[in-house]
Length: 266
Image (cartoon, rainbow, N blue to C red; front, top):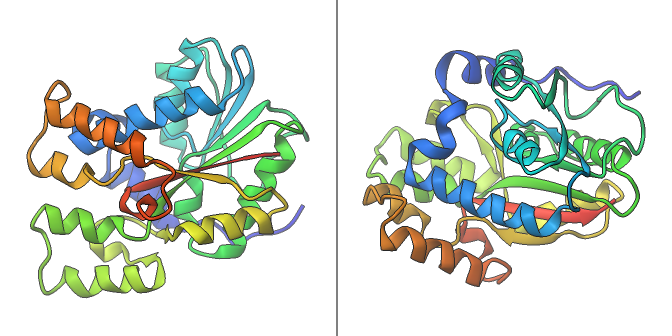
């Protein structure tokens, strides 16, 4: 198996000591929009249950638990031991193990579908992202979907601007991330890479996968939701979901989403 440099230790530290991932998708309006739209998209692109889904970088199990509840056979893998322990405790029907997306001790063609809903934006080096995609392709049965999430290059600057958090310290850091894609942990987030849509396509093809279909997850209205503290039953929230669905594959609007979802067949 190829040898890779160890994952950045601040990723484990961030998710163990700094940030609670378990409630991210329902703590704020933007997280609720991300969860709603990601589930809508997964419902469309995954094979029907009881297909076997490998959820690589699945965190404490937000999507794994939902998929298991829908009848899928789910194996969650995550780099952070605390996430794996939380997933095991919350979702005993989900198999959960610690592992690195770039090199997983699983047999070829072991899943009907593979999700990478976190690893790609925590691997700053392109070679490592391609390795994770190549590994996902190896583990997915021929014809099954490989589904990967990335953070949009524009997201951090849009987010902090909408929250009124830009200042003389954060502005140059965010402009640097916008220029290079590489996030500086001084922004408050951990080691990360932010993609342009065309880079996602290039990395899939470099991994031997077909060019993926790209979907904008949150659409262009997501910065308003947190800024206005929009509730899940407010009209603006439902309008934001509808707007995201309308523009989800429009190349001119893709980068306005906070996250992109890429889907290709293994």
